[in-house]
Image (cartoon, rainbow over all chains, first blue to last red; front, side, top):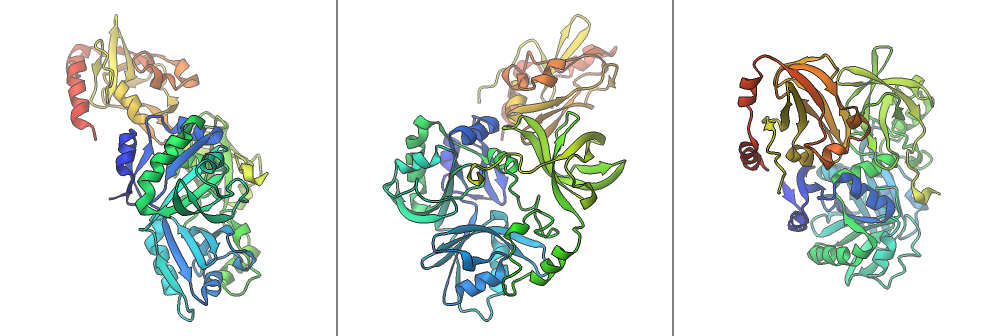
Length: 364
Length: 132
């Protein structure tokens, strides 16, 4: 089990450490998942997400290589822009979801902790014919997320750089709290904020400075439980739940990331075919009618027949409702369709509802 | 972690407490249990009239992250359930020794079953030894 450099800080704050993707991370602090979730929705929260991976890509063929290995059309991206994308297998199913940052010297790619080795191997396996330099810079890069409507003003107090003016899905290099770092106006919570990539040796000092600076605004350290409930409400997928190696982007409602117009890329022909055919399954959002908590893996049934499964479910802290995401055959995807969630063997009624449950502010 | 241990109840290893009020046994979960769960969002209670044996999973308490079984600390038949917990499950966190789940008319061997449970001191030691 690996530990981030902030492990002792989390313990000192009363963090409850749990294993996640091979790392010991705080699932919550004494404040608890609901208070931490609400802090991000009403003020600000900071997450230690150093378990995630970062790769650096450069070289004369960097753009051509990246265009080939992931689904989005990166030719549209200006320097400093950032965008969500997917790596797909040849059959169109998903290797991982990633975030791309176009930098002056090349690219930075942020990947899920649990897929770091897999993604690196996948990218390395496809480098033939491309003059590139691909390096895993995860160990020396410390990743933090500062999210919530007060996040930017808190960070602005620690920096002379134009953070407030930085557009969504754009990055910059700046000194924040005296630490030179890359920051992207991106996130996994449905709120405004930044994701920070700083040199690992400054992580502890920066974390302490940030907590002190943000305290007056109600900034709280937040754990994995809050991270999950926040992304779930905003209907952002989690690998291993809504997306995996048995799911293609269209089924997962991530077709918007796929640019079938661009020249050949990994998975293109399968994705072209998938787009033209009917999906065998599709992701829906649902709201419980009967009072029950739907959770991942619970079967979805209609008239006694199991037709799908829940990928994520919980009582939504911000909406105060019992909701979930799950896969069903396309016949059941219409809004208002009634389905049953099997909770400990008992059929609990639910209905298909619109996604996202919580509208991310930056989409307004 | 300074948990509260109510001195007037007996405790099961699975962290439920039971208190006798006349012939009726009242059941809830301990302060240590509610803390380990964190924010309780939902409680599924047994049916009135349901028969249970000590150790049976008879109720479920759900937190943000997980669903946990609540086991019967003693045997008997359910005579009352706490409807308030259905509407305000967070009471379990706020006041674990007041937020009862269900009441049971115990079986004939209740005294020996109660003797097999732990008092506050024994349970406190048990919790400390099993803390991770």
